[in-house]
Length: 314
Image 1 (cartoon, helix red, strand yellow):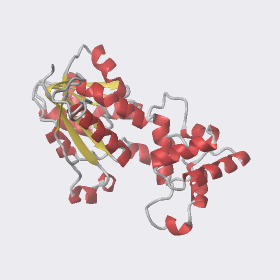
Image 2 (tube, one colour):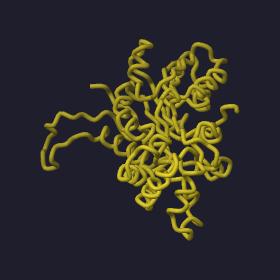
Image 3 (tube, rainbow, N blue to C red):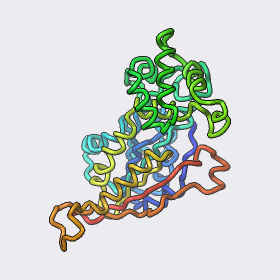
């Protein structure tokens, strides 16, 4: 199957970066290279560093971006290693960094990757980086009931998290849970039928939670934002597209903290804590897809783009 993924908020992301023709930009979630193609098209002498932990994504982007030659440097890694990647290339500051945190259409539609709940035979895999050994099946079959319930509640906001966790424990005592179909059936028996008729697929929240836990998506995001801001030149921008409230909340809060990090009591006439602002939040409200885009690409519906601009380095 070809690596196909329709880039979300493409024009808005490109506009948000204020691309400098000779600048250096980092695509931290390269995917098939849709955003990267547009960035490189706007560059004349600059470079783009594309990072992705998915080998299929790196190969697809390598083929797609070959026309740009050495101006496109692709690295198989996680964006949390942005410092290591840039240091290895002898690059200090960059003019822009962007992330598209959504699971790619390729990952969702490729059954063997195990992200989908729509194919009953799909394995419970969900690894973004297939070099990792732990899979979603390992979580489902080894975690205790309390930990499973916590994950489903915190990362999936699943109101029936305790019931689902309890039923997972019961089911795996009889047989190892190996496929999406087996897990979906457990979830269906845990949620009242009248509620399954509304709100989308009943397994959506559970699968999201397991994927986030397995790949440590929220922890990586929270730990990476400050480092990425530090890597920006003055006026450089960090643009992040999120797809659910948990991600968006982290981005919003980290951006606010970098804009106003002072911890002094409000009655203090001057700041004495020594924490300096790193720049400004460009997007007071997130940029969302147009109605036309969501009609053409329903998976874009929940996307939100937030942008931070680096101030003068002090």
